[in-house]
Image (cartoon, rainbow, N blue to C red; front, side):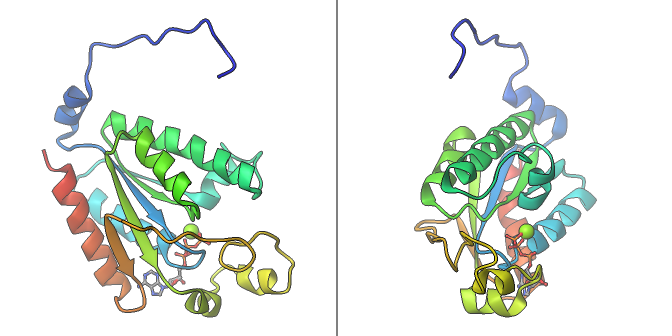
Length: 197
Ligand SMILES: Nc1ncnc2c1ncn2[C@@H]1O[C@H](COP(=O)(O)OP(=O)(O)OP(=O)(O)O)[C@@H](O)[C@H]1O
Ligand SMILES: [Mg+2]
């Protein structure tokens, strides 16, 4: 905190009041997993289904946020933490507003996911998009592994930077044993049980 003379100013509308207007509870759905594991692909489909059945849903995606809010950040551990800190704050605000927030971020360290969960006061579903690194290398949808493997990209998760597997995720989507549709269906079901008023 860089400022001292600030006081929190409470409103008269509660989270419950906002939820009532939207007819749903807000939640942060946090997809973690290696690059190429399927986070964005699953998030896009889940968002489409939830929107089509009248849910207030919004998607936040790693690369997209780096074009704007976090365009000043790189991929050092410090910058990755700051990236996740800002995103966690945005997620918490959107959740408090009553939205279903679908956040797709590699978020390789357990402490990052922990921070995101804390900021949204536990109204949080940790989704482990589980795909082994060999499969991600084969998929390589952005051509990033190719570059990382020859050292053109430094600090690449799974190759030259660590990924800490979630120990206790709320749901695991195994993209090797399940199809995209199956993963999407599982996640939509979970979200609906948590957000129904
Ligand atoms: N069951 C599945 N679920 C999701 N994606 C799958 C599945 N099977 C194959 N894929 C493919 O895997 C790739 C996943 O790429 P995607 O961009 O979604 O990964 P990502 O986790 O968002 O990576 P990044 O962290 O780099 O953004 C896509 O090409 C997708 O078609
Ligand atoms: Mg992605």
